[in-house]
Image (cartoon, rainbow, N blue to C red; front, side, top):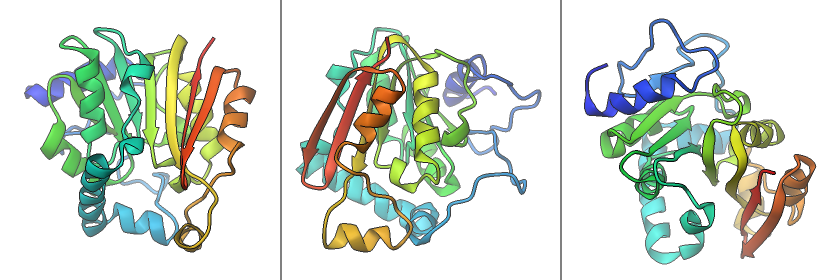
Length: 239
């Protein structure tokens, strides 16, 4: 690994529970799942669509539109209080734009890692955002590969609804968060019309208090929710 983007992946290897002897970074990201039968698969119409090359391109464009029109979809970087030189995790990093924003907040000595299971998404993220402070990993959010209490902040935008066991993913995010540090997730909430129709494609939509209750059950403090229409941010701090 000798490119600028692989500097971030070299740092990522030091954070893993079980770092591979021969890391696969041939596609610009660290692939911890490979092509084996045990690798997690996207299930449901919505998940398969977003994981496809066409879906990943449309997702990227939709995110750009959201950033221009809806401030509610932007990560709460100030609230996350990322320290200079901090290490940040972006779960469900998609095209990587949010991961890069978190890296900028961490400063020149910081590191932001984005994880996703979609190879087309990861390819787009690597092409657009990978660098010395930004690295991407193909991994399962339900079984994060990182050691306990590794990250100074954890962020996840509009991905929990696509994960088969969202509760397990949230538990994992809290596990890898350092004491005193903060986590923020954005999810779609129960609604009418298009939201209900999307749920038939395999996406999950959460009750108004559902994520907040899970955060409190996981022991987080300062749990706060903010809803705008069918979008909800939920924040918490690890004691």
